[in-house]
Image 1 (tube, helix red, strand yellow):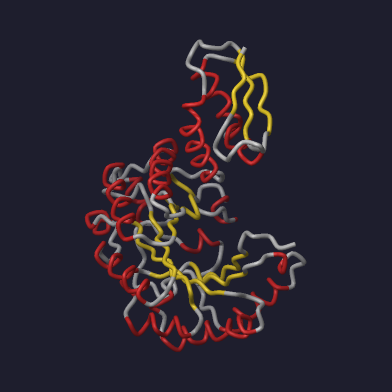
Image 2: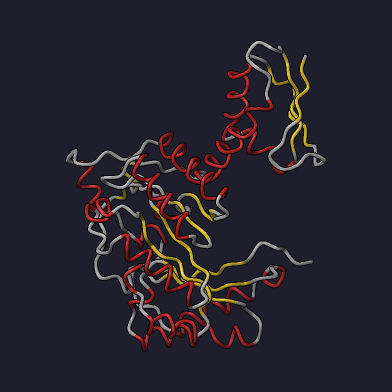
Length: 342
């Protein structure tokens, strides 16, 4: 029996190909991988290890993903070396596709044709924002127009296109990020990732926080912004495939995160917020019941309960009723609840 969820085997190339380091960036901490050159032999070794896992072939679709650097800015011989190392695994069906992460200003017709010819099918653009003032402040080195141009180019070449966004950067606000989301919806990528800006020790952004030049988002602010963004993107048919940084050993070390909306279950917080917004209409009004029992699909129970039962407390406060039970009921459609009142 195949698991329908795709298996992605990451190959981290921290900062490789990047023209400079942005004010918020420390790829070594984010990935727990040292910033050292990755070659074809390294790639082959990682993929051999991955396919030796007992659960590897249970996944119907298996993909190799190059993360952490600016893939398209690597020298052409290096691009060929890394992708050629994956080629035999594609040819024998061990893996089915390749995705890469790169900057919007790193692409042109020649680079896209090269990557397409060597098996890349998905390109994720580290756009961070589509507000030129935000991009200027973080010294990103590219414009919102570069992102729009690259999305158009990639679509013309037949790639699936992802956009990575970072709410809460210097110069950003809920209103300006809402404008970024509106622009993303207009250019219609195939997927989006949301990574609220956190402040890592050793970055220039950390110096700005310590000097009072920058105030990061609170956890609650970031949850609300990401929930609203997810709702708008997914209603427009653009899936949000990741919310919040992946947890790494380096990020767990005490003192590495100096500020911002870091939470190991950030994605769950956002999805729970979205869920609670959607079920509000099905709840009794305040004072209409003293006790309630809620039925919901089994997969939605964690969203209803929320982190550390915060969702339960939220419903009880809103309704002024005690929740007697939360019962799984898979006859209900996802996102729907049935409420019994007393």
